[in-house]
Length: 578
Image (cartoon, rainbow, N blue to C red):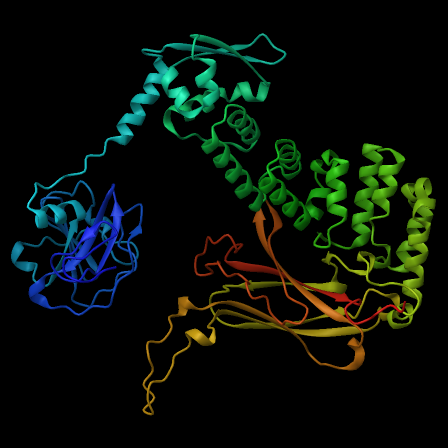
């Protein structure tokens, strides 16, 4: 922000003293200036910021500083003095005194001031008034009746006044027809297809799927008003209509809605995945795939699992970031899918070969071979993988690696929730102070390492400050330069082994932290953070989390639900001889 007299930045012109702050509200830029006779020396303020309530964010005021609000004619209409709000004159049409607290929510007006009480106030002028004062032109006042215009457009659509086109929307496979009296100009503004379709005719019959026909009124309303209310079951038909008629803004809006509700665990991820594949929406497809991978245990226990296509099943089976109890749970889910879908033998055998059998203990492998209907039917197709698993469990990893390749995905654990591979950790009131815990994991998935454990120490800090933000002392007297505020810190999680003994020879460890969120009574994974194998912490852990806010998306009843997972990895240190 340019603080020189007469300077201009962000739509404001300084003609009093250096600007203390500015923001946008009601289509106008507002700026804060001290009266010139007070010679206030204040730190530079944040640049222009937009806020729906017009709050001047980022501003710093001395203890005796007051705020005054003026309209375009610079008439005083409100003030905020110290810690309470006062009111003078009629309410401002642009900003009300209740909107003027520089920090947090304002209390109700408690005092009325006269003109003589305004000594030492900062005057707030809209940019239009400032430019008019400098240039000697008449001041301009913003008149905003956009909401009234939108209401009239809604009335125009509902009553059909002055309509010049008729849309007859027929639901496919039925005799049901919905009639909409519309206006060629408004439809054509949003949709090139409508513009061409209605260029030389005043009536059109539109054949739509039943679900699309059911929400066509919402679709038309969006073309008139630019807004609509979406339900989960309406997302796909609205997105399909927006795609068909080329309404790009609605298409983006519905896709954003779907991705946001996937993150919250509310969306039907399987159905939305198949829809995204059919429409070529790669961003939505990836969002669905990530949600399914992180919450596979919840998905396989729901009715959605039966709707999984062979293509989606294959995409999931290849991933190492699947979150589930153990590999046996994945095998059992696959067997249930095979029994329900009854795919061709080639599809079934390909899926069975994607199971990581070395991650299943030998005792459970014996039971699978004796009881599994899928192995009884397709056993020969995976016989070599079962033999490989038994060999892996019978020898030490170092000895096994002398004869076989251990660099494949079959020897890499997924994100298992079983106690052998990690532990849950619930941190109540996580913004309060530092916490620590410890847990144990199995040294490796091999049966040879089944009785060997590694102990891990974990430290959580809600407001850790990087070195660059810590206080720096300016002189020998120990005077510190401006200290970092608590909110400058970020959450930090450090996971370290309790000892560096020889038990871990030939093994490196990959750490993963899952952050849970409760949705519809279920605890789902909202975020997953992976540590680099050589690192003790995730650099981006909760980087955007506001743990001070009780309704934060990262908290469940003011508690942070974590699950710590440690995956042993052999192939980074073991090399198979050629």
